[in-house]
Length: 120
Image (cartoon, rainbow, N blue to C red; front, side):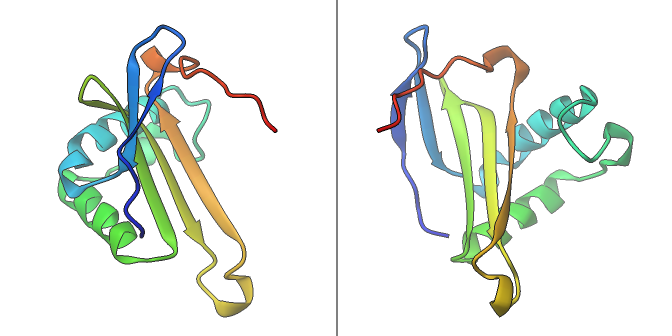
């Protein structure tokens, strides 16, 4: 994965949102967000009762994304706290390397706060 950020954006309410590459040290906060979003039982295919990731496993997952040039794993921080996650993985086989999938989780308390920019 390429290193991304940190890049600072502003929320609708004027607070700074930092977007950057995830690090293994973020595992606990990422795990907390994942559990919270799964607990809402709306947005994820995996239910909270099926999710049993440990901090150690989360660290390894982060490191596997970091080690793979075709993967991307970003976090969003507000005031130093991780509040969102975006991950992307491309197709694992040569014939589908041009395809991929992504997942996104955002802490409920900060959803819909980043100012949208016009698309040109």
